[in-house]
Length: 277
Image 1 (cartoon, one colour):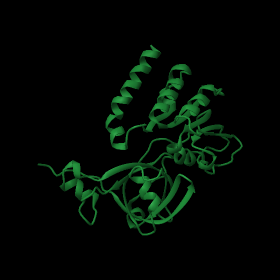
Image 2: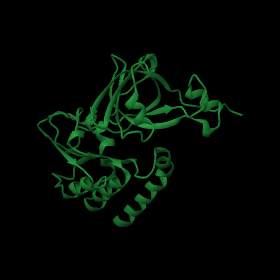
Image 3: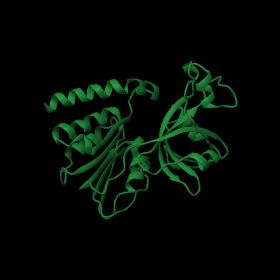
């Protein structure tokens, strides 16, 4: 039997943390693995797969060995996070976490992380970067997309026109973004409204300067589905001009969402094809 191929993850250590907003924590990690092997910067939506041990995992924790030697139900818990910044000179990787109390795996870890703590990760993946060839840029999302949108705005082509719509819980959850001549940023404060309601309404009401748009839309799956329909069916924007996907789904953890995502996407595409035919 051929040996099972497993990812070659990076062992990192926490260098410092920062409370950016009441519900967003920044964690900066480094270490020899990053210095020697890690590369990012081709895309502004780079993401990494964080590896957390399950209860009873062997110690010391070695994700590659666990995947190679143990059954799937013993494999590390994986959570996906955007690379907010990669500094190759310092070999420092910055990750921003949305934290809601003790809910979840990665958020509580980030809230309690201290310098010297270990964090294993794999990646990076990614596929989007603002193009100089686009007539203008549109970026929209909820809290989960704020790090990728912030990273993308910092890499807008010189002189670009861009509109960013960001939905967060309150004004306290806003983070600093670039101030550029051609950039318009609108923060939408959800309060007690359902996730995505304000963003979907604002997006639907938005007047497009032209059809020559490159759009980046990510966040909760339901809001992404509604906005994708607006883009594809109502505004007839070609799929090639869009980077659009659900980062998460209400009522599901990442394991549940990832296991159902392909079916969800197929349903969305089928409904879209039917509407366009």
